[in-house]
Length: 273
Image (tube, rainbow, N blue to C red; front, top):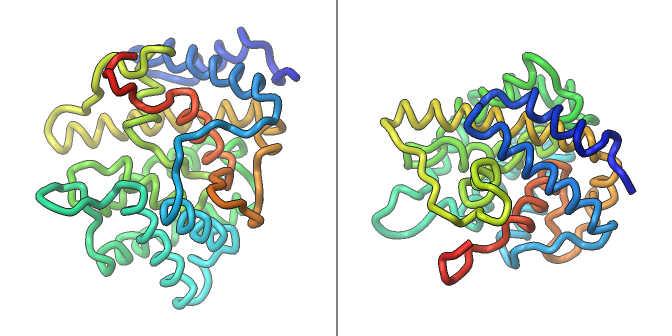
């Protein structure tokens, strides 16, 4: 099985799309490795970190609601959908007890921030309801990045992780779940050295937001190109609603995320890469 383009052409395409000189070559190389990894699986199950319980159950339920457009339905449908998403976030590590800013804001505030961007979300839903991120171009692609940073559902200064994971559960075909542990590490570290050092986004809150927004843009551009080039293969893993227990293959962006999690792997206990 081969991709639509040669490995060399695929890498060149990525390097032309990604603007940041700091991550251009590394990200392109890692996406080529990811391509070979996906093809090498030959439709076998994607090895993954062992997630179970609420982290899977509420994710699946929120995605089913998203595919049915519940957020854009009645007020009751929207509230029920947002409650599912609100339950996903702590189960995905977005809310911790104790003296930490890793907390989701109260449900009323959470709801109001998302409802504030409902018009933009509805436009994307109508235009791309039966399409994937591979079909998004120009201003709409920029809007997807922009919306991640228009909602702030965490008590921390960071927008990227909590916002992307929230919006993924409303428009799963367009928004990827992005995190530092896997997504950003995959962009910034060479293959085989993902855990060579810790990754922190430094600076003032405004500077960190700017850096996060730039990383989100580059990540989404790379994901879009990867899905466009590998959509037929990735669809072999895709399910609609008949999810098995522990199944995370709920959209093409989530399958992309699953592949990254699998190839990066858990942090070695020794701390070595």
